[in-house]
Amino acid sequence: MDSEILRLKKLQAQSPNKAKVPYGNTQKPNNRAHYAKNVIIVTSGKGGVGKSTIAVNIASGLAQRGFKVGILDADVYGPSVPRMLQVEHERLHWNSLDQIVPSENFGLKIMSAALTTPSPDTPLIWRSSVATSAMIQLLDDVAWGDLDFLVVDMPPGTGDSQLTIAQELRISSAIVVTTPQKVATDDVRRAIRMLQEIKAPIGGLIENMSYFVSPESGVRHSIFGEGGGKYLSKEYGVSLLGEIPLDPGIREMSDDGLPVTVGGSDLQKSFFMGIVDRLLSSGQFSLDGGAVKEC
Image (cartoon, rainbow, N blue to C red):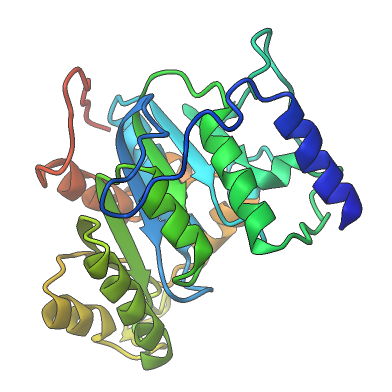
Protein backbone atom coordinates (compact mmCIF):
# COMPACT_ATOMS: atom_id res chain seq x y z
CA MET A 1 0.00 0.00 0.00
CA ASP A 2 2.76 2.46 0.97
CA SER A 3 4.59 1.87 -2.30
CA GLU A 4 1.47 2.63 -4.32
CA ILE A 5 0.87 5.87 -2.41
CA LEU A 6 4.49 6.86 -2.97
CA ARG A 7 4.07 6.14 -6.67
CA LEU A 8 1.02 8.41 -6.82
CA LYS A 9 2.89 11.16 -4.98
CA LYS A 10 5.73 10.84 -7.47
CA LEU A 11 3.28 11.22 -10.35
CA GLN A 12 1.71 14.24 -8.66
CA ALA A 13 5.12 15.81 -8.07
CA GLN A 14 5.74 15.73 -11.82
CA SER A 15 2.35 17.22 -12.58
CA PRO A 16 2.46 20.79 -13.97
CA ASN A 17 -1.29 21.21 -13.36
CA LYS A 18 -1.49 20.01 -9.75
CA ALA A 19 -3.97 21.92 -7.55
CA LYS A 20 -4.68 24.58 -10.16
CA VAL A 21 -8.36 23.68 -10.54
CA PRO A 22 -10.62 23.55 -7.46
CA TYR A 23 -13.23 20.84 -7.15
CA GLY A 24 -16.55 21.53 -8.83
CA ASN A 25 -20.02 20.31 -7.91
CA THR A 26 -22.77 18.41 -9.69
CA GLN A 27 -24.75 21.56 -10.50
CA LYS A 28 -21.73 23.51 -11.78
CA PRO A 29 -19.18 20.90 -12.79
CA ASN A 30 -15.65 21.75 -13.77
CA ASN A 31 -14.50 21.23 -17.32
CA ARG A 32 -11.35 19.24 -16.66
CA ALA A 33 -11.69 17.47 -20.00
CA HIS A 34 -11.68 20.79 -21.86
CA TYR A 35 -9.70 19.07 -24.61
CA ALA A 36 -12.72 16.86 -25.46
CA LYS A 37 -15.75 18.20 -27.30
CA ASN A 38 -17.89 15.44 -25.81
CA VAL A 39 -17.66 13.22 -22.72
CA ILE A 40 -19.45 9.88 -22.58
CA ILE A 41 -19.49 7.93 -19.32
CA VAL A 42 -20.36 4.23 -19.34
CA THR A 43 -21.73 3.26 -15.96
CA SER A 44 -23.77 0.73 -14.01
CA GLY A 45 -24.67 0.24 -10.39
CA LYS A 46 -23.67 -3.41 -10.83
CA GLY A 47 -20.34 -5.12 -11.44
CA GLY A 48 -19.97 -7.95 -13.91
CA VAL A 49 -22.41 -6.65 -16.52
CA GLY A 50 -19.80 -6.16 -19.26
CA LYS A 51 -19.48 -2.42 -18.85
CA SER A 52 -15.85 -2.32 -20.00
CA THR A 53 -16.68 -4.32 -23.13
CA ILE A 54 -19.37 -1.78 -23.95
CA ALA A 55 -17.08 1.20 -23.26
CA VAL A 56 -14.24 -0.18 -25.39
CA ASN A 57 -16.49 -0.93 -28.33
CA ILE A 58 -18.33 2.39 -28.18
CA ALA A 59 -14.95 4.14 -28.18
CA SER A 60 -13.62 1.96 -31.00
CA GLY A 61 -16.84 2.39 -32.98
CA LEU A 62 -16.60 6.17 -32.70
CA ALA A 63 -12.99 6.01 -33.90
CA GLN A 64 -14.11 3.97 -36.90
CA ARG A 65 -16.66 6.63 -37.67
CA GLY A 66 -13.78 9.07 -38.12
CA PHE A 67 -13.63 10.77 -34.71
CA LYS A 68 -10.65 11.45 -32.46
CA VAL A 69 -11.34 9.39 -29.35
CA GLY A 70 -9.74 8.80 -25.96
CA ILE A 71 -10.79 6.22 -23.38
CA LEU A 72 -10.17 6.64 -19.65
CA ASP A 73 -10.38 3.55 -17.47
CA ALA A 74 -11.75 5.05 -14.23
CA ASP A 75 -12.25 1.65 -12.59
CA VAL A 76 -9.16 1.98 -10.42
CA TYR A 77 -9.61 -1.26 -8.48
CA GLY A 78 -10.66 -3.49 -11.37
CA PRO A 79 -9.18 -2.01 -14.55
CA SER A 80 -9.97 -4.07 -17.67
CA VAL A 81 -9.48 -1.62 -20.51
CA PRO A 82 -5.71 -2.16 -20.99
CA ARG A 83 -6.16 -5.90 -21.60
CA MET A 84 -9.10 -5.31 -23.90
CA LEU A 85 -6.96 -2.98 -26.03
CA GLN A 86 -3.65 -4.93 -25.88
CA VAL A 87 -1.73 -2.37 -23.83
CA GLU A 88 -1.74 -4.14 -20.45
CA HIS A 89 2.08 -4.50 -20.44
CA GLU A 90 2.79 -0.86 -21.25
CA ARG A 91 3.83 1.56 -18.50
CA LEU A 92 3.75 5.33 -18.08
CA HIS A 93 6.17 7.73 -19.63
CA TRP A 94 6.24 11.51 -19.92
CA ASN A 95 6.75 13.97 -22.73
CA SER A 96 8.98 17.05 -22.66
CA LEU A 97 6.19 19.04 -20.98
CA ASP A 98 6.02 16.55 -18.08
CA GLN A 99 2.66 15.30 -19.27
CA ILE A 100 1.79 11.62 -19.13
CA VAL A 101 1.70 10.16 -22.63
CA PRO A 102 -1.34 7.92 -23.21
CA SER A 103 -1.01 4.50 -24.78
CA GLU A 104 -2.48 4.15 -28.25
CA ASN A 105 -4.07 1.30 -30.18
CA PHE A 106 -6.95 0.81 -32.62
CA GLY A 107 -7.10 4.56 -33.20
CA LEU A 108 -7.71 5.27 -29.50
CA LYS A 109 -5.74 7.14 -26.85
CA ILE A 110 -5.85 5.02 -23.70
CA MET A 111 -5.20 5.77 -20.04
CA SER A 112 -5.69 3.62 -16.94
CA ALA A 113 -4.38 3.49 -13.40
CA ALA A 114 -3.32 -0.07 -14.26
CA LEU A 115 -0.54 1.43 -16.38
CA THR A 116 0.99 3.01 -13.25
CA THR A 117 1.76 -0.29 -11.53
CA PRO A 118 4.95 -2.42 -11.78
CA SER A 119 3.04 -5.34 -13.30
CA PRO A 120 -0.50 -6.03 -14.55
CA ASP A 121 -1.40 -8.03 -11.42
CA THR A 122 -0.32 -5.38 -8.89
CA PRO A 123 -3.34 -4.42 -6.75
CA LEU A 124 -4.05 -0.76 -6.07
CA ILE A 125 -4.65 -0.84 -2.33
CA TRP A 126 -5.87 2.71 -2.07
CA ARG A 127 -8.46 4.48 0.04
CA SER A 128 -11.13 6.27 -1.96
CA SER A 129 -9.53 9.69 -1.47
CA VAL A 130 -6.29 8.49 -3.07
CA ALA A 131 -8.16 6.78 -5.90
CA THR A 132 -10.11 9.98 -6.53
CA SER A 133 -6.89 12.02 -6.67
CA ALA A 134 -5.43 9.57 -9.16
CA MET A 135 -8.51 9.78 -11.36
CA ILE A 136 -8.33 13.59 -11.35
CA GLN A 137 -4.69 13.43 -12.33
CA LEU A 138 -5.45 11.16 -15.27
CA LEU A 139 -7.84 13.84 -16.48
CA ASP A 140 -5.56 16.82 -15.82
CA ASP A 141 -2.05 15.63 -16.55
CA VAL A 142 -2.33 13.35 -19.57
CA ALA A 143 -1.40 14.59 -23.05
CA TRP A 144 -4.78 13.70 -24.51
CA GLY A 145 -4.58 16.25 -27.33
CA ASP A 146 -7.77 17.50 -28.97
CA LEU A 147 -10.52 14.87 -28.82
CA ASP A 148 -13.97 14.66 -30.31
CA PHE A 149 -14.94 12.14 -27.62
CA LEU A 150 -13.58 11.08 -24.25
CA VAL A 151 -15.20 7.80 -23.17
CA VAL A 152 -14.94 7.06 -19.44
CA ASP A 153 -15.32 3.48 -18.24
CA MET A 154 -16.72 3.91 -14.74
CA PRO A 155 -16.45 1.53 -11.77
CA PRO A 156 -19.65 -0.02 -10.42
CA GLY A 157 -21.64 1.73 -7.72
CA THR A 158 -22.94 5.18 -6.85
CA GLY A 159 -20.13 6.49 -4.67
CA ASP A 160 -17.01 8.67 -4.73
CA SER A 161 -15.95 7.93 -8.29
CA GLN A 162 -19.35 8.67 -9.76
CA LEU A 163 -19.73 11.88 -7.77
CA THR A 164 -16.23 13.03 -8.69
CA ILE A 165 -16.82 12.51 -12.40
CA ALA A 166 -20.16 14.34 -12.15
CA GLN A 167 -18.43 17.24 -10.38
CA GLU A 168 -15.36 17.46 -12.58
CA LEU A 169 -16.60 16.73 -16.10
CA ARG A 170 -19.28 18.24 -18.30
CA ILE A 171 -20.96 14.98 -19.21
CA SER A 172 -22.50 14.90 -22.67
CA SER A 173 -24.10 11.50 -22.27
CA ALA A 174 -24.25 8.76 -19.64
CA ILE A 175 -24.71 5.23 -20.97
CA VAL A 176 -26.10 2.75 -18.44
CA VAL A 177 -25.36 -0.97 -18.81
CA THR A 178 -27.45 -3.78 -17.35
CA THR A 179 -28.12 -7.47 -17.81
CA PRO A 180 -31.68 -8.86 -17.85
CA GLN A 181 -31.93 -10.42 -14.39
CA LYS A 182 -33.44 -8.71 -11.36
CA VAL A 183 -30.22 -8.99 -9.33
CA ALA A 184 -28.65 -6.63 -11.89
CA THR A 185 -31.61 -4.32 -12.48
CA ASP A 186 -32.04 -3.77 -8.73
CA ASP A 187 -28.63 -2.08 -8.68
CA VAL A 188 -28.83 -0.47 -12.11
CA ARG A 189 -32.03 1.35 -11.20
CA ARG A 190 -30.11 3.05 -8.38
CA ALA A 191 -27.48 4.19 -10.88
CA ILE A 192 -30.22 5.64 -13.09
CA ARG A 193 -31.78 7.41 -10.12
CA MET A 194 -28.40 8.88 -9.19
CA LEU A 195 -27.87 10.22 -12.72
CA GLN A 196 -31.35 11.73 -12.70
CA GLU A 197 -30.86 13.34 -9.30
CA ILE A 198 -27.58 14.98 -10.30
CA LYS A 199 -29.15 15.96 -13.64
CA ALA A 200 -26.62 14.15 -15.80
CA PRO A 201 -27.90 13.62 -19.35
CA ILE A 202 -28.67 9.93 -19.89
CA GLY A 203 -28.01 8.82 -23.44
CA GLY A 204 -29.63 5.45 -23.03
CA LEU A 205 -29.57 1.97 -21.60
CA ILE A 206 -27.84 -1.11 -23.02
CA GLU A 207 -28.87 -4.63 -22.05
CA ASN A 208 -25.81 -6.88 -22.27
CA MET A 209 -25.85 -10.71 -22.23
CA SER A 210 -29.44 -10.33 -23.34
CA TYR A 211 -29.88 -13.79 -24.84
CA PHE A 212 -27.93 -16.74 -26.25
CA VAL A 213 -28.51 -18.25 -29.68
CA SER A 214 -27.60 -21.92 -29.91
CA PRO A 215 -25.19 -22.40 -32.84
CA GLU A 216 -26.58 -25.89 -33.45
CA SER A 217 -30.30 -25.22 -33.43
CA GLY A 218 -30.52 -21.45 -33.80
CA VAL A 219 -32.87 -21.40 -30.82
CA ARG A 220 -32.74 -18.28 -28.67
CA HIS A 221 -32.31 -18.88 -24.93
CA SER A 222 -32.86 -16.26 -22.20
CA ILE A 223 -30.16 -17.53 -19.84
CA PHE A 224 -30.28 -14.54 -17.49
CA GLY A 225 -34.00 -13.94 -17.80
CA GLU A 226 -35.56 -11.38 -20.09
CA GLY A 227 -37.15 -7.98 -20.12
CA GLY A 228 -34.92 -6.25 -17.57
CA GLY A 229 -33.69 -3.59 -19.98
CA LYS A 230 -37.15 -2.93 -21.37
CA TYR A 231 -38.55 -2.66 -17.85
CA LEU A 232 -35.93 -0.10 -16.81
CA SER A 233 -36.40 1.82 -20.04
CA LYS A 234 -40.15 2.12 -19.47
CA GLU A 235 -39.93 2.71 -15.71
CA TYR A 236 -37.42 5.55 -15.90
CA GLY A 237 -38.06 6.98 -19.34
CA VAL A 238 -34.63 6.03 -20.68
CA SER A 239 -34.06 4.93 -24.27
CA LEU A 240 -33.05 1.30 -24.81
CA LEU A 241 -30.11 1.64 -27.20
CA GLY A 242 -29.56 -2.03 -27.84
CA GLU A 243 -29.60 -5.63 -26.66
CA ILE A 244 -26.28 -7.44 -27.00
CA PRO A 245 -26.33 -11.26 -26.95
CA LEU A 246 -24.25 -13.56 -24.81
CA ASP A 247 -21.76 -14.53 -27.49
CA PRO A 248 -18.60 -16.59 -26.80
CA GLY A 249 -16.91 -14.82 -29.70
CA ILE A 250 -17.39 -11.42 -28.06
CA ARG A 251 -15.87 -12.78 -24.84
CA GLU A 252 -12.91 -14.30 -26.70
CA MET A 253 -12.14 -11.08 -28.56
CA SER A 254 -12.31 -9.08 -25.31
CA ASP A 255 -9.87 -11.49 -23.65
CA ASP A 256 -7.56 -11.30 -26.67
CA GLY A 257 -7.58 -7.50 -26.71
CA LEU A 258 -9.43 -7.15 -30.00
CA PRO A 259 -12.49 -4.87 -30.05
CA VAL A 260 -15.50 -6.55 -31.61
CA THR A 261 -15.98 -3.44 -33.76
CA VAL A 262 -12.56 -4.21 -35.28
CA GLY A 263 -12.36 -8.00 -35.44
CA GLY A 264 -15.91 -9.26 -35.20
CA SER A 265 -18.20 -10.64 -37.86
CA ASP A 266 -20.60 -8.28 -39.59
CA LEU A 267 -23.35 -9.44 -37.23
CA GLN A 268 -21.20 -8.98 -34.13
CA LYS A 269 -20.08 -5.54 -35.27
CA SER A 270 -23.67 -4.52 -35.96
CA PHE A 271 -24.68 -4.85 -32.30
CA PHE A 272 -22.18 -2.19 -31.26
CA MET A 273 -22.10 -0.01 -34.38
CA GLY A 274 -25.88 0.25 -34.23
CA ILE A 275 -25.55 1.65 -30.72
CA VAL A 276 -22.83 4.08 -31.84
CA ASP A 277 -24.96 5.34 -34.71
CA ARG A 278 -28.02 5.75 -32.50
CA LEU A 279 -25.90 7.80 -30.12
CA LEU A 280 -24.54 9.97 -32.92
CA SER A 281 -28.05 10.67 -34.17
CA SER A 282 -29.38 11.52 -30.70
CA GLY A 283 -28.54 15.22 -30.86
CA GLN A 284 -26.62 15.10 -27.56
CA PHE A 285 -23.21 15.77 -29.04
CA SER A 286 -21.16 18.50 -30.62
CA LEU A 287 -20.11 16.93 -33.90
CA ASP A 288 -18.59 19.96 -35.64
CA GLY A 289 -15.70 18.80 -37.77
CA GLY A 290 -16.41 15.09 -37.18
CA ALA A 291 -15.63 13.16 -40.33
CA VAL A 292 -18.24 10.42 -40.09
CA LYS A 293 -17.52 7.48 -42.35
CA GLU A 294 -19.22 4.17 -42.94
CA CYS A 295 -17.54 0.94 -41.92
